[in-house]
Image (cartoon, rainbow, N blue to C red):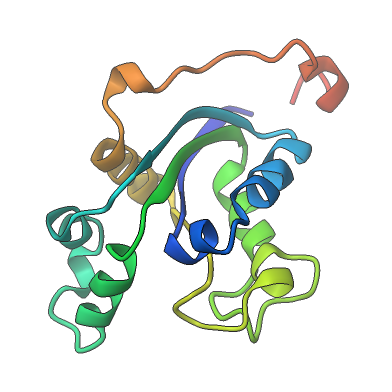
Length: 154
């Protein structure tokens, strides 16, 4: 199997509620590699690029206002089937519908203030990673504990 990459955003509500460490620790405990991470303020222009498919929708002004309201953390995670794995870890988009044990199920009770964004497929991941990171900011590595996390042929 080949490694995948995904973009994860710890959104303003995650930062404001001081859940950044909790969320990151879940990804680390799952054995996913953080190969890029930074704190930044999303600008209206970046929000429009990231959410380009939603800009003309009636809910977009509220979405832009929310995502630009506070700093966020952007991460690139790498691992086997990482896109699916991360989305499973997050749970349903609405915290009210997310299963207990998922990040949203444990910490969110809102559709919009749902703590975390994650890419929904390989093409979206590649596009979103380029929006938030320069190539020299992504630093893949092989953890020394990899043999303890998965078989050599995985």
